[in-house]
Image (tube, rainbow, N blue to C red):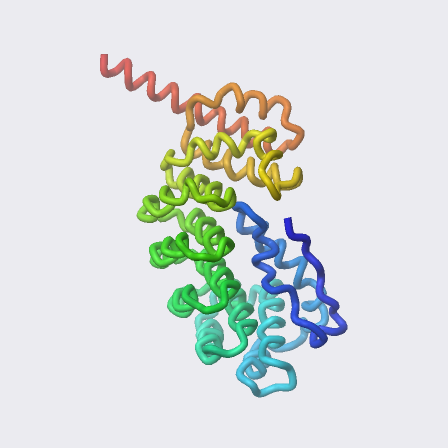
Length: 306
């Protein structure tokens, strides 16, 4: 997993920050949205402390070239401030101003677009959906990743099919984020596209797709989900370290609970009784209860048909 570093709060102008806090936080497989946001907050925390008293509107002036800071720096600090400032969440007028700034950024510095996409996701107003969709074809892959995340944050299902198209992107992290966001949106119309990537060479994408499908009550990825709750299997996947196991298992167990998947009782019993992580034990217990409930319902229906 990529380790995350914290930018020096005293010298933000000295060097560009990490390419994209979303890419760092995403890692390699599906993470709950709150964990993604939490990863971003670690990256941004110190800069916010230095700029918390600045009016967000002032950053828009600088983004548009009317200030002392570089536009990308202003976009960066705006995205920081919105992480901890809920006053502008859902504010249509301010969201439109940020949209206008993103449109004006055009083919300029991609760092401006990267951080404005994050800002739009945090403002969380559907007025931003068209510009975010337009930037799914951006020349910069990190703008695409951040725009996907923002669309997932806004949660507008009208974007689902366009996001599904990104499952065929050349960039691994674009495809991974697309699969993740489709799971967040839960639009069953994208199930065919998700099924098509269940055999993707990258485990991250297979796992994201399997979880997304499971949350849609589609069991096409059940085999992948079964693998994801096996610590021995996870330990053999290149690039996966022990700290990555629990998040992957929790995502899979949530999908299995939704599916009421049968045939995994023994493994779920072992997890609920002896897994070292209490969160996994609890999730396994819920998945097992759902599986047994599903089996009971099927038996009852069978008896009714006799």
